[in-house]
Amino acid sequence: MKYISLNHNSQPVNFQTALINGLAPDKGLYFPEKIINLPKKIIENIKTIDDTELCYEVIKDYIGNDFTEDELIKIIQKTIDFKIPLKKVENSIFSLELFHGPTLAFKDIGAKFLALCMDKIKNDFDSKEITVLVATSGDTGGAVAKGFEGLNGINVCILYPKGRISQVQEKQITTNDKNVIAFEVNGNFDDCQKMVKDAFNDIEIKNKIILTSANSINIARWLPQMFYYFLAIKKIENNNQNIFSVPSGNFGNICAGILSKEMGLNIKLFIASTNINNTVPRYLESGIYNPKKTKPTISNAMDVSNPSNFIRIQKIFNNDLQKINKVIKGYSYNDSETREAIKDVYNSYNYIMDPHSAIGYLGLKSYLKNPRSDVNGIFLSTAHPIKFKEQVENSIGDQISLPSRLKKIMTKKKNTIEIESYDQLKDNLLRRVN
Ligand SMILES: *Cc1c(COP(=O)(O)O)cnc(C)c1O
Image (cartoon, rainbow, N blue to C red; front, side, top):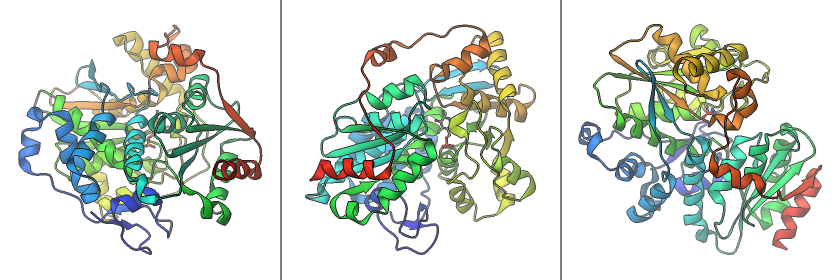
């Protein structure tokens, strides 16, 4: 498979190069040159195919010959080695729980797949060491850290804004093996991002270190997100129409779902559920794409007003808004609606949702209005409620307990390097190779 740049000013590259580059040299996002049609027998027999085998069939043609079958199967096994339950919440509404991975967020799946792929190809870069550099506002950092932890020959440097991420998130970033280095930045998320950008543009760094990113536009993080749409449909026992509601920020997750549908998976419709940063729902309604200033919300992993992956969705539909509107509906919700939903679902069904998942739930409710026996409405639960403990406890008026896996990490001592300027970051990066 070749990957083209959506800015159309760079050469097509194979999977491996697209993975290391992250973005194409012309700053465009990579996109597969063609969408694979899965053989009918896979779709028809989906319930009888083993999980790993199914994921292998879904992704193998996008990887091409860069890995052997054996290598790819092993990567998939390690990527999906936790449960992904589909829980019935109420009539015709299900929660696909994507938060049982190492950092209790759906980003674990993409981050792990990316890390294992990079681990496999690192030997092609002979003497130079690979350093993965990421800025995080919270969730991404932990997932990337855990994805790469313990992989020899790859360093991961994570920059986070001091005092601005949750306690659980901080522990997940700062208590890992030696190859994960946490930089605690005296500043905000934008400062962290600026430092990362400066490093990528620094010739001296470029000459000594192979720098790569692990952010959500990387194809190796984006594509494996197809797995859970397939695994969810595999679990469904009726022949109803399937509708997915995806809490969306950068629109990578929903875009992977749409790709799955284009490949033949039995999905009728997607609901793009957002918080008040609702550029896409407004666009679907009006045809005008008009990002506004990003506003902070309690579903902060979705505080994105210019979603980088939306261009991939437009590409799938050849930029035809009518076609997009047939497959995607958009709804948005403010914080008080989100809190209300968390409370109502807890009181009525004894089910606890985090603020992001709650927005997914609300999207389904808006679309379905009344329960319908001919439809399976599935919302993606993208984070464990404990990751947004305070907000959730305030909404439900009850305590939620720490999962046992987290108890251990909360007692570990944090290990960080405090910095406040790009030069300090640079010194640290260079010192490791000199
Ligand atoms: C990242 C994230 C999202 C948004 O996913 P996108 O692929 O960026 O649309 C939703 N919920 C949680 C908890 C997240 O961490």
